Image (tube, rainbow over all chains, first blue to last red; front, side, top):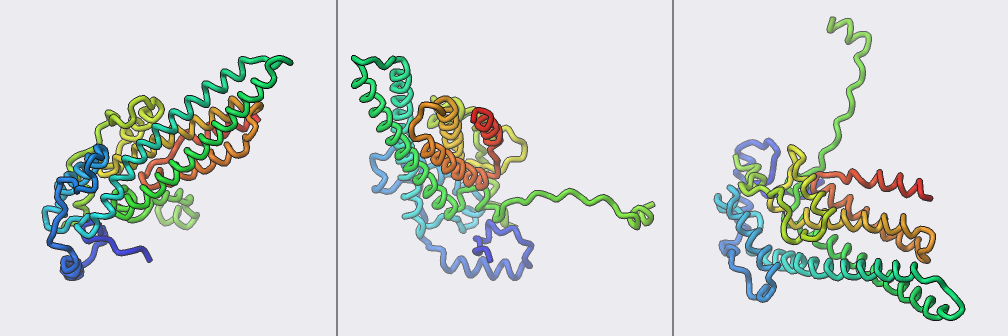
Length: 190
Length: 116
């Protein structure tokens, strides 16, 4: 059974009573302290992380749920939001490093390809290939690290309802093509 | 009342790519394509996720091209292919979360098959 969503995200057609009871119950565990748009000290000197913090909380303050006093991201979730903001900044740094490695890899590859191995330059030629292999390994390692980082980011984003699918609840399923009408249906529908 | 408020943020994502995608041509094209699809469900809340999706998309294409170009002389081609598979796995996960599907993957797959 899927986890319960906050009432503001629940699209089920519940009765008014059930909905009110749910809102009452959830308001009991919503802290009175609100997250402020000013980034916490922990994000000091982290420009990108601060901008993500401000953007997410500004957007949240515009939602009707927040205006009704039931924001999705509450003070309880401060740690998750800080972590998410830091991860966005780290992702940008890792991505820049990967781009540099990719460029270096391309440059070295074209350099090695231009050399024709002879008796005299064989040692240098093999050394360049060794360098290229090392660079490729670094590239793969960095690429895997970046993907793992993005995967964790995605998990945190889902837990804070910062993805369309987590807000909507379930993935849309494709409508199956309609079966052709049977002989009986054809007769009945004229 | 109040059940879909969170989805109705007034700020929608601009089709103009953010600064974080500067210099990433393929990622920018994908950003524009995804946000041009009528009826998409992506809001400003999902900006970072969409940036990631577009960057992973660009990287996936780059790795596929690397493999295609260097298929004969790359010594550790199998490891690179594993990297490509993992990249695509992440791409699909992100695409599912965003309600978009990567249209290019099948095309690149068939191109790779042709090279092999």
